[in-house]
Length: 101
Image (tube, rainbow, N blue to C red):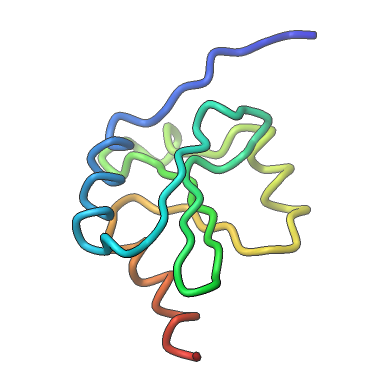
């Protein structure tokens, strides 16, 4: 089996830290080491789970593309997955379901 180094985007830690500061009541679990296309972050809040793939918005679009494994997972996953570039986008995605409760 071929193994690849699991990389995180340069803004990963910054985005997670900012999100935790903005929404401290949320549970945040870093999945970035899981590989196989699994999104970077799992967030839980008020009975909902959210999967986020963090990409560095300062890079050109070609450098922000999903890997083949990520593309496959995103196209077949039947739950929520969102690609984000900052903590504000995470909050906006969460607000979509939290406002409907």
